[in-house]
Length: 164
Image (cartoon, rainbow, N blue to C red; front, top):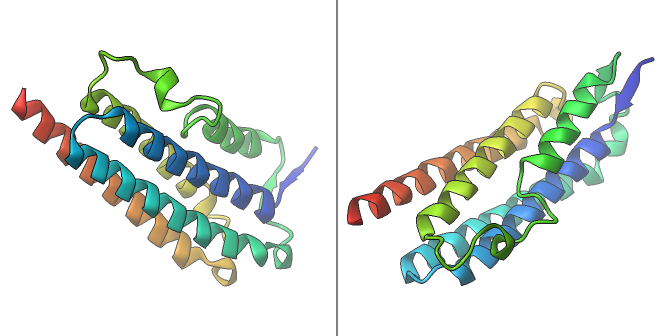
């Protein structure tokens, strides 16, 4: 049986990923003691909120594109949903639940780094199915910005490692 995973569904998951990311970064900023780490986490939250706006705008036009993902055995849809629900800023887990008083800014940033990798994987997985008219280039821009997040977070992890 062929499953149709439409653009609205895929973009709603993308919106949720970005909402979860922004909430993660804002909550994480409250857990770290170092002001510069707090500032970085807040900036990342702001960027995730900007990405959500891009996906909301794309979603508002998604009804024009019915055949988004032709998925004969439902594997692609299940894969996309699994990435989003299990690996990308999981919505039912708060930073305070993931860490304790012994956790460092590095620990929080490593968790963020892994979530960024997973969000990039999700966005790249849907990229090949996003029609140009729906905003394929905008999605490419978001992917590039998420890759920049990886670089920024990794540099911060390295800097924190060198301090200790």
